[in-house]
Amino acid sequence: MSDALLALLAPGGVRSGEALAAALGLTRAAVWKQISALRKLGVEIEAVPGQGYRLVRPIELLDARAIESNLSDRARALITSFQVLRSVDSTNARLMAAPGPTPGQAAVCIAEYQTAGRGRRGRAWVAPLGAGLCMSVSWSFVTPPPQLGALGLAIGVGAAHALHSYGYSEVQLKWPNDLVARGAKLGGILTELQGEMDGPAHVVVGIGVNYELPPVARAAVAAEGNPRVTDLRELTEGVAPGRNEIAAALVSALVETLARFELTGFASFRSAWSTLDVLAGEDVVVRSGERTESGRACGVDQDGALMLEHDGLVRRVVAGEASVRRA
Ligand code: BTN
Image (cartoon, rainbow, N blue to C red; front, side, top):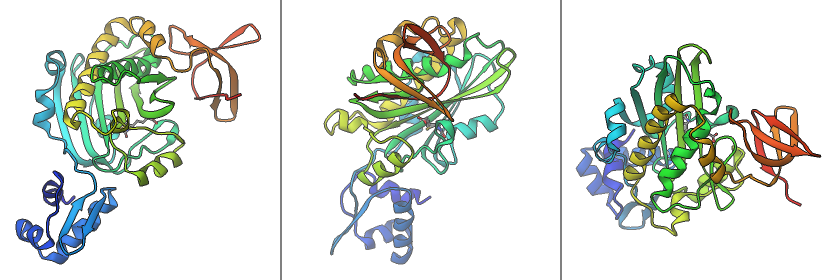
């Protein structure tokens, strides 16, 4: 990737082609090629006639030191491997391909850009460079807690609370694994597991949060099944804490949640989950492959299954894509 060019343009302001070429030790044609390459990654670069190039939106690039210095003490003590990459296929895939960390320790992978970001249910996770926060944490359970299937819900609680602490008090959770605000998707969680539900298990939890999606990216995100999307910038009317600060808060939340989940399973997260539940009391439809279940959402059980009430009967739904039925 054109790292040096990106670093020059990231803070904003116009840079002439000549100045960029001189700073990078490249010809102007080579600079132009790198500009095209960055555009392909979703970075919006404007050509200002007679002046040069500038980013439509300045980007605070991810910086390992800035993130590490903002981690909570508890998380820092548990993290033994910490990577911040400019580009990777998928942070989840990267950590799944590596051996699980020593039990009780966490491995972290954060990426500025994913070439093959994974969403739930086989979808892609779309985040142009600089527009999102994409990270994963790897953890090994010697004996997984009984409700390992609810880990993603617990991670949602940790992530939502981390965002609340930055003033994003509107953030709620949509069963099973979405972060939502103002009726739109802000982020998602993907939990992947290697091993047995009742034997040693290596899990990777990944989270993607929209930070500042350019308008063109919204269409691509919508094409992945999320017609309404929002981002942190939109929720705070154009001002948001820096990406490194939020990344540190999310990593800390993920690591701390994994450590707590190991001790308590879902039990210590369930009531917090209920207070964040955006579907509670709503008439919902849950689709899973060919199967469709509908009813009034009445929370989750101790395993994280969605409880649907219909004609006085309550049924549990363990997986699927939930949507609110509008009258
Ligand atoms: C979803 O809502 O579909 C879940 C999205 C999860 C996306 C994150 S981004 C970081 C991590 N790496 C991936 O490839 N996916 C998760």
